[in-house]
Length: 292
Image 1 (cartoon, rainbow, N blue to C red):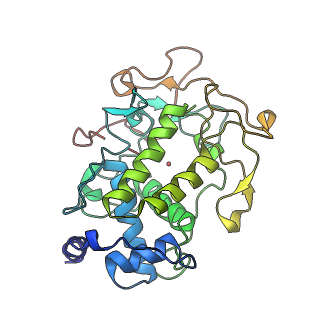
Image 2 (image 1 turned 120 degrees about the horizontal axis):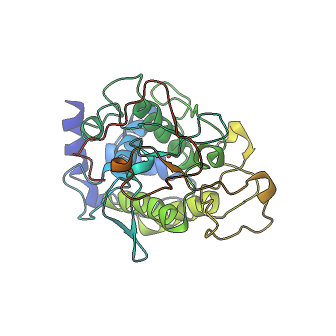
């Protein structure tokens, strides 16, 4: 019933866009516009809708006619360059930071892949890597978009790693990969009727946080204080002003962990591949499409 009521509510999405008051956050404003009542539970629902769309593309109807491929699309394009983020999430590459000195292969689609996301859920269970990733994304973006209910019943505060650089450093993302991710966030927001000015504000915030190599510490989550946040770490990424590269060294491109899943991404020599205990790198073919 809840999912059906959400779909019905989205039928009015075209009427949601108006001038957002300057003293109201993006999250609070669009929660009211789309889901009528602004509370922590509805804010969490809004972030679930948004983030799931970023990951797997459009899955709710109707929307305002904006097609969103999603970050897991095998056919992603950015600035005329093919982008395939899937191998970072299906265990194809040893690109996850598990606390060691090199990346490990980790399957973040182990909680049902696209199927639960299409039901407005993070995963089929609460113990999977997928559940942890998706709920952390809801929480992180909830804070970034100013959800007033974060930390209240119905919308837990972000409980993940404070430094996005540390989370992503073994992925060695380049400007096109980071740009594609940010673009998908904007397109997902647009598909729900978010105003262009608000989309631009979100894109600017993400670019400021993530898109400059060796950027100095900055605060993304207030409770966690200043942290290194840039996820664009490839040498092709634009060097930040006041760069701190000594603290954020460039890593080698991640090793291929599964040649089939890697789909031509990553490197094939230079060290042994580590696997997270119990990992079976499996990919669901229904996900022609992505993920933090």
